[in-house]
Amino acid sequence: MPSGKVHDWVTIGTALSAVPLTAMYLPPETRPLAWLAIASYTFSGIWLSSDLDVPSSAYRRWGPLRVIWYPYQKLVPHRSWISHGLGIGPLLRVAYLIGMLALLGLALHWGLAQIGLALQVDPQSWLLHTAEWARTYQRELWALVIGLVAGGAAHSLLDWAHTRLKRWL
Ligand SMILES: [Zn+2]
Image 1 (cartoon, rainbow, N blue to C red):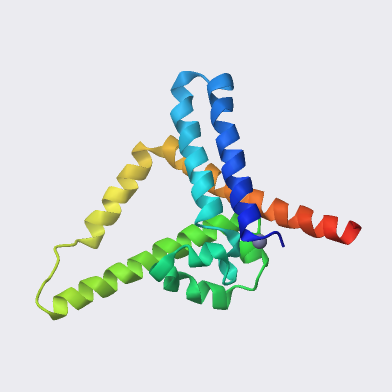
Image 2: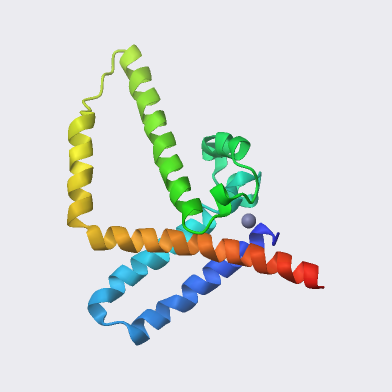
C-alpha cells in the first residue's frame, strides 16, 4: 500500500486544488457548502483514514486519544471492506468514533458522580436537540457526509491503483 505520507499529500493536494474550482464553477451561495465538504474530505483522509485498521501514521496522529482506535484495529482486518469499502468505511468509522466518545462521556459522567460532582445531563433532551439540529442543517449534514465518503474513496482508489501498478510492473 502507499505510505501514509502519500495518502496525506494526495488528500491535501486534491483538497487545495478543489477550493479554486468551487470559486470558478459554483454560484456564491453554494460555495460554503462545498468548502464544508472539502473540510470534511480533508478530515476524512487525514484523521479518519482507512488505515486506522493498522498502527499507521494516521493512528499515531491521534496522540493519547489513539486508544479509541485500538479496538477498531484489533477487530477490523487490514484493507477489508469494513475499513476500505467505498462509502461504508468512513461512515462506519464516524459511527464508531461517536460511539466511543459517548462511552468516554458516560465513563467521565460516572467517575464525576463517584466523587460527588454530578453533571446535569439529560440524554433525552440532548438527543432531541441533535435531531432538531440535523433537521435544520440538512444540507450541511449532506455536505459533511459527501466529504467523508469522498475522503475514504480517494484513499481506497489510491490503494487499489498502487496494487494494480505494482502487479503490472
Ligand atoms: Zn489503505
